[in-house]
Image (cartoon, rainbow, N blue to C red):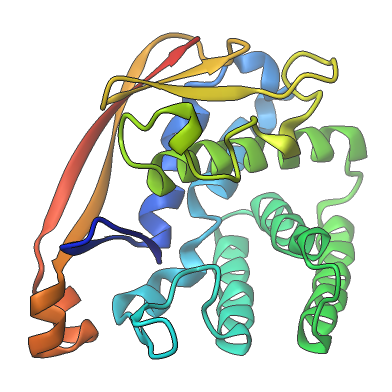
Length: 257
């Protein structure tokens, strides 16, 4: 779950909703980023479905007593999170082994952000490395440079969607979430080939401009969220309050900056 707190309510975005937005964003990237037309749809599947392991977890949010907020994707208890990462990858594999390979690379890459990873995560990464070898064997000859390009595209589309989800619409650069304030670090050199980072900025409350240019054209996309009132959580508990809150559809525009 991705969560923002505006004081009166929690804006709660299910991970799979964020993933679906990632996929919409990917479909509007310039075709040069895909490199191999025969892999296009499989890459889109990987990007769209990369967080499908969260569907069951997000169906019933749980409360973080220590912080008096719902658990988010960042601080959710590790063991169930890892188990559902693997469940999600297995579901993606039924759709496309190549997409599952990309998703496995994505989740195993989280170790780069954990300087002292717990043993459970180390074990998870070893299991995913084994899965990756099995998938490569099943796929036959895999072009490693192409695979890495598709993996980096997944990461950038994931981060662009997170940029929308984690920031208040229209946020000034100084007020943006710190992860992306200076640009998309994981995409360094991916867009332009140089050392510069791709950067996003808000143009008003509904439009996000990205530079250097990555999109074929300006486009609109929607994102579903639930605005769960804090008094309702106090009355019903987080699980029931979330369930009884209606979805709100948010429309955004993406353009080249």
